[in-house]
Image (tube, rainbow, N blue to C red; front, side):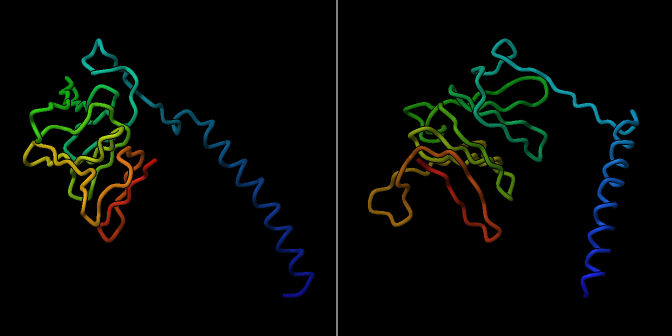
Length: 162
């Protein structure tokens, strides 16, 4: 490509971008194309266990999961079901301070906590499985505060820790 054709390419791109931008503005100004976001505000008055929400994730069944500093909240569109740690019951969540939420490819929520590792809520069983510090195990958590959860395409989980 010679210098002259590069100049024409720059000129056509520089003319195309303003036209594209103008077209987008015209489309956005048409009220029929504007999407209005609708939302509901939830608080403790509505059944949420605590007002500061640290994480939110919707699931395939239509529930919305909210992680707070006082438990995991599952909202079904009408009411909240709050899951909290119970010291004597190992099938409950490992801690009440929720820091991260992730929905795996099977539809199970994974829950990161402050200082208590990560949990998986097995939807079919309605119970939690805890993953934390396992002395002597190769795949143990170095730090038990989980701030991010991700599942890679090969099914491995990645955790963001302190």
